[in-house]
Image (cartoon, rainbow, N blue to C red):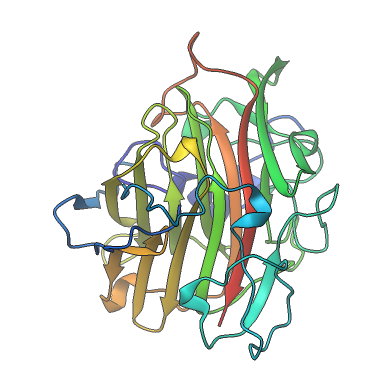
Length: 331
């Protein structure tokens, strides 16, 4: 989660990979019908340096403004599936002919803890944060809510806990305190349908960590800054023989992603990574050094403040709600 900026979610996993001993918890849109690709004129490919650390308008057929249950995935009748997408939700085109191996439609009244933790892998009890990233939130279970057919990761001001003035929420399918991941995978298409909050200092993201605890690699499916809610960032972090953190990041300007539901996904295959925004390809990577083979787990979080987005100000509206309609993986 680290496109060409000094803040970067990359720093988050770098710190985690360094080991729990070195870090402690801080406080105990549907595609447009014309489909452009990553090479179109509206996209920009910029490699993120190791020390720094869009989107087409929805078509008339878009599910972007639909309610959560109206836009998300139903497999074809002959599709094999170990998970069960909700009836009426269209299957992503990238999953055609594939098997859904993971799905959560957040349709109950509480988080499915057989699938998700609410902490980073290195955190134990209470909330945690990444002060090295300049973030100002303390992740807390109470900020992770499920209602109305969606997951809500809620950022709010709080009395300062360990010097952090905000509480927020995250989910991770990784393990905590040395436990095995609750879900991980190697290769496949993974996607989330989300509605992000706008506002200075807000930093929603959807990304991966490594099951073995190492870093890099890292795949940042989506990062958006709340003060620029029409700009999507997609990044891969990798290492070379001479450099441990190299970031290949792309930004693309599209619609205001805070004004409705949008899908963000990556097709991860041997030798290739392809990013999709509302079903339209926006970035492709084929260099062998950039495509990981390590097993990965999934994360979504709403960071508040940080070196990259800056801190909230008087214009930022709280509570800030990062909504997730579904998360899926197909192979």
